[in-house]
Length: 180
Image (cartoon, rainbow, N blue to C red; front, side, top):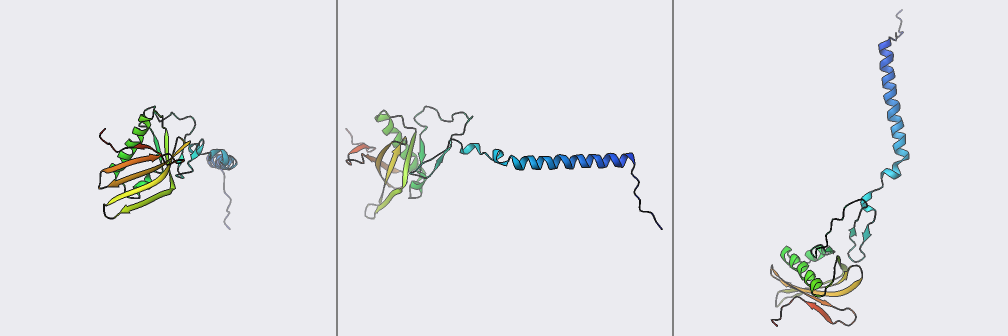
């Protein structure tokens, strides 16, 4: 008959003790993390966020982060403008459109921080005879004032912006130079 008794030496007791200690630390860590899961999943990027109602895009302003914008007029946040690219604007026209909005800001002594396109208001018209495209849409400036916008564009480079007061349809800005 063979005896199956395991003889514990001081070395094997030490190894079993170390393994037991490691397993205990892992178990306690798992329990701790599962109870504190709510606080660990607090995504700081969504704190102080704003969902723009017109474009549906989210603007994040997480706490404890440096302000990434400067006071330069070039630092306007353009929300919903990618939808205009989907309607056929080229990248060059898109950049010129942003320049037209900055010109509107400068001419009217406005400090524009944010311009939003109400995406549900975008209407596209193509004039087959002239090849000109027209997009009309509503814009909201600095989350306060609303303007009706119309852009006409053709080719790869040409784009003009017209802004109107929505109450009386009076034109308040045009990017078209009339030579005067």
